[in-house]
Image (cartoon, rainbow, N blue to C red; front, side, top):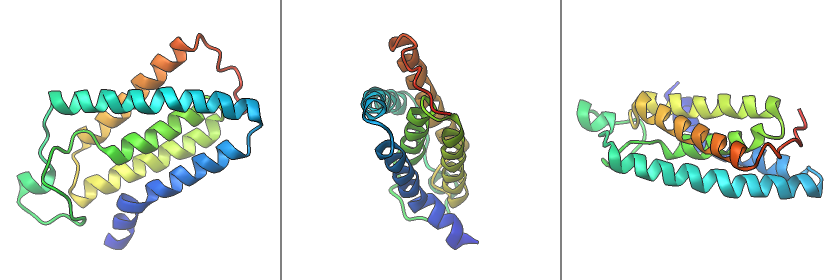
Length: 155
């Protein structure tokens, strides 16, 4: 069981990136351009929000507070927010504007990664929730900044 959790916590994000990349490359050129703009706005915006959040809120990692050895070796730094969930959530958010079904699958994988990282002892639930909130805020900002021009949803 622990081996599966460790795999999900450490490596499943690569599968999410691969799915996002494949989805991007199979789209027509006009959708690729639109997705690229969407990604160039959402990912950096979510990252900046997460860095600001990390400066405003310090959450020691669970293994530091609980004095135990986590399943995954990690630095004893600020756990807020989770970079893994932020990255996979950003991919899921970009895809959401083009395929709600695939995005739902990617969100499930992002939450699985978050759950595995909590189980592993390197994050608290608040770290996962913070990442999701930052990605959602970035997606909402993009949606309104784009003026609802993302009407190219594939479904």
